[in-house]
Length: 401
Image (cartoon, rainbow, N blue to C red):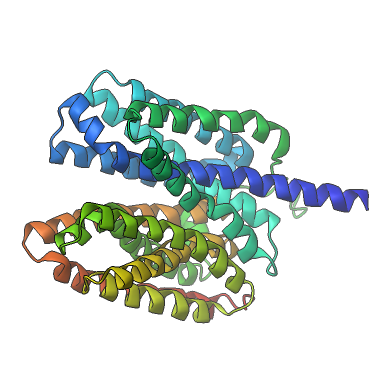
């Protein structure tokens, strides 16, 4: 009985720590947008240079997810997660103290690098604690930290309108460093599996073996496609939604209200869809997520009715961020053993590439004068492709519901 209680406590503390890692990713995701005006004024940056500030963090996440996952398979999840948080915390703090634009750019890249490495490792840690019966619930409890973090920093800026942008980054950088000693005490690396066959010990397979051999490509390729296009849509909404709504004629306060309810919807979607994941088949989840996202996009970019836009904003948060959390939740089940974090990290890297592509594509469409109609036309095929990819995963994971 004592062992059972100890195991439950260990699981709770693990999810609790991972929730806070996700929280600070959400904090970092929202902070540059809120601090944009102050950053531009401090360093004398134009719109193109501010684009570098936004994109370099995501660029760092791409590399962090790809290489961090691989390193975690060699060194262990615990060490890499602690190192990732240290890198993130130090360089987010350095963002606030940067003496020049060049230092600022470097700090944003390395902040993203740390966060990028943390995410696949964290997902695998939670995946090791999960069973088929509670995978969705545990993942949603962990991942809802991301929209909660975004809501927190947005609320902080609303409640303290005179707060300096440097203060936001110092809060977001120094606070997560407190997690490192807690991780050292609480987290446990999963023991490496010893294979008693020809007196050999299991080694870490190379990347091609993890991702493609023994029919693995049937899992890897749809997972990559789903991650790429889902995060592309998610980051279009996170980065551009207020500006797009103002282009449709909304006032600034109305546009930011829709963005706030978007993040509230993200929390609801992460928890609710995680609950459904434990009860529905994957193809059914794909139908709900991408059907809902399709409707939300149509409403967001074709109406100026405030009540309808608020509804669409909530739906957008539910199905874009919530759908993203489901992909994070299912990705560990398609890989096993010593290559798990590599597989998860590769999928997240493709997702980060989509996250970079979405905002850049949106800017190009707007520059061509195609407006929100052009963005809608570009976005809807991506929703359909994602739905097909995730449905394909349901077919190839025979042990999954």
